[in-house]
Length: 128
Image: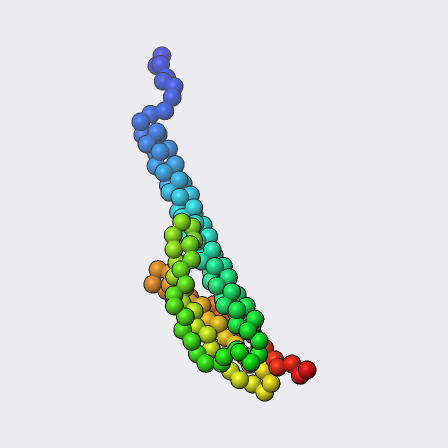
């Protein structure tokens, strides 16, 4: 009569460790992708905020003071997730009949890729 041993052999243990490592590495990669998407969304939301700020400033001037010439503003640094990101802001416009179209384009770079957010608004001359 042979005595059967209970428990795992070294081979079974090594196979279980390899299977667990593959699963954990997949989980870590999913966390990395989620953090990357979260960072990109926060950077884009900040760009929308910058564009809104510049558009509000332009529209608050009133019809006569809104310029339709193209202007490149100095880089706008914003703090995001403990770091800083620079945004480029360009204002341009078009004169229409009794109104002006104002374009604000905010651009930024992430990992060698350029992204843009455009905001367009029209301000009209009121007859009083």
